[in-house]
Length: 184
Image (cartoon, rainbow, N blue to C red; front, side, top):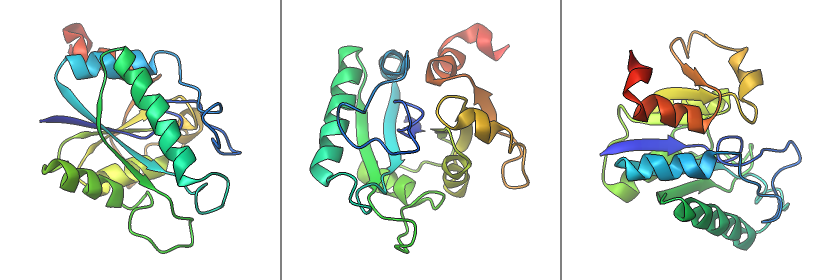
């Protein structure tokens, strides 16, 4: 299985320091749904691993979160894309959970749901904590410059993240995987 694990906010949709609190605030990034479609059609298996502490903070409900994911899934499907699993951490930073990135718990949830190892898979994120979660689970880290990615890029390389591939956005990463001349 060719698994790609995606962060949500800043990779698939616009991010906000004020949190994405409603379906209307969930706005796809240009080219992201199309990239999910192209990757799915090419045989990649896509999953999402997303911290959603806005639930614990009372900014939005689990029902609202599920409605956002329904919108995200429907948009991807319009372009032939599919997410096989969406793992989310609803906890706050002080809740002592094992799923909040940079811990690898969400990736382990994806592994359990799919019955596969994420070892060697791609972990695409826009923050250092996304990449650290991927590394902790044996994934290949990819940083996109969308969302918080441009700011995060300034923190690379680091001792814990020496070799991170960086792309402008999810569509550019998809081009890298799908277009043979990108590997030369």
